[in-house]
Amino acid sequence: MADDTSLSNVGSRYAQALFDLASDQKQVAAVEADLNSLKKALAESKDLRVLLAAPTFSSEDKAKGLVGVGAKAKFNMTTLKFLGLLAANGRAAALPEVITGFAKLSAAARGAVSAEVTTAIALSAAQAKGVQAALRQALGKDPEITTRVDPALLGGIKVKVGSRLFDASLRSKLDSLKFALKRA
Image (cartoon, rainbow, N blue to C red; front, side, top):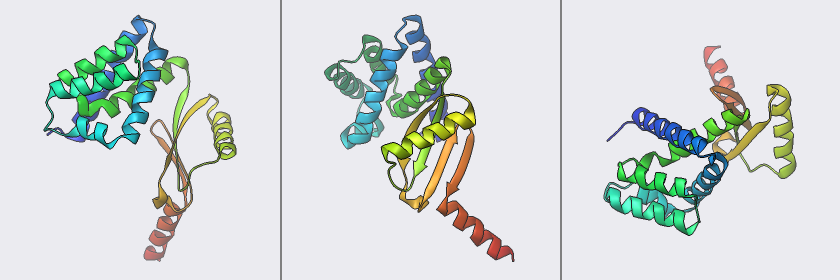
């Protein structure tokens, strides 16, 4: 079984190939919309996640499943062919990394910055707008925000932009305090 590093590398290579193909065909926006729909479907469907990850399903079965989901959702033909190829090559498990990689490439091409915001509870619309405005001011670019809820943070916020992480979570502050008390 491949380790996470090789899987991530595979995902980024496939994302680059798909991005190049979509760019050549001037279908980046359509493919990105399809991949966002697929990302949402992966988050909501345990069966779809099992199909991608389980070694008991053949590459052919995975291809049929992915193309079937895409056809039902009326995905672009480029996206459908790519999903079939990805599964046929035995790389269906790399699909989440491909989606993430494609989104980053697309955002970079538009001149936008991707930011992942993690909070202990879901942000309200007003809070999300406030975070977006603060990031726009700090980065000087329009951020494309994806939000995630992690109750382990206890409170506060974590913002990841590229390789930078801004951590203002209660969990990290408690950990810092705990470390300081151990040293004293």
